[in-house]
Amino acid sequence: MKKFTIYIFIMLFASTAAFAQSGTEETTENQSLTLSTEALHITKAAADSAYINEQYDTAIAIYEELLSKKGTAAEVYYNLGNAYFRVDNIAKAIINYERALLIKPNNSDYQANLAIAQAKIVDKYEAPNELFFITWGKWIVNIMQSNQWAVTSIIFFLTLLTGLGLLLIGKSGLMKRIGLIVSCVFVFLTPVTTYCAYYQKAKFQNRNAAIVVEPSIEVRSTPSESGTALFVIHQGKRVVIKDNTMSSWKEIKLENGEVGWLPTDAIEII
Image 1 (cartoon, rainbow, N blue to C red):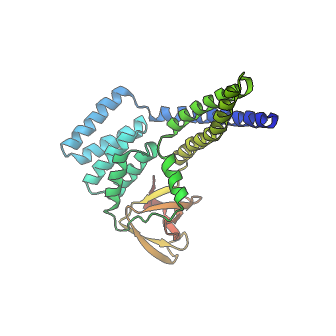
Image 2 (cartoon, helix red, strand yellow):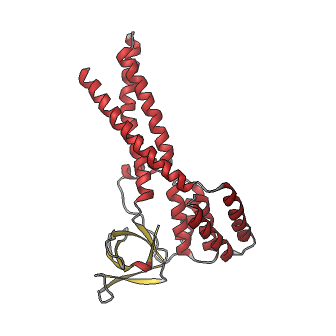
Image 3 (tube, rainbow, N blue to C red):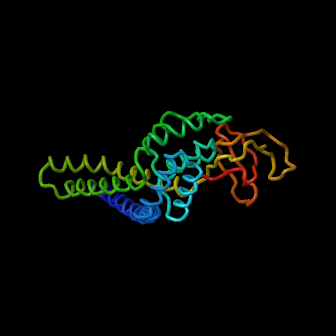
């Protein structure tokens, strides 16, 4: 029992520290995602009006200005993606749908429009083969945003404290058994939910995916125009940046495992 209690307190300390850091980071993100209410109403209303009136270039300019000056917001990214889609700039539409999904990964409208845009590109997206539990794990993580996972984590943490209290100071055998069960369950769930919050946070902050914005581009064997042309990819294709150390060239990887080098201006980071 003593070893179990020590283990519980170690887990409590780790979870508390993790949540404290997550909470600090979440506050920063929330600040970046919070737009001035007045500016959002006026600027976004103007952009929405331009979009409704099929003035898509005007809508794009206003949405871009809103994002650059007032911060990031999933709905604005989504609307900007729709405007780009209307002017047949599929690459930019995909980029903005992807950015919207970084903030709200479980939004079905964003997912549906992204799929529609991806269906229009030359190089179709090929989902990598994954073990079923990895697929399930990603689905679970994407159920909520990072701040929602953080709130869930602290609720589970408090439940764990309650269970531990029943286990240690419960006067009846039933109370102790309930405390033991609750402690065993939530000592597992608390770090899991904390990890989900960190995973979503890291995905938002450490962006290593990009979209090809050139109509077509040759992927080369070395970071030079004289490098051997390995294959050709087209606008809208999603790539993962493997080497980001050079300013003018990036080593990229496709979902099928192919790798090569592209000029930096041929892609835009999500």
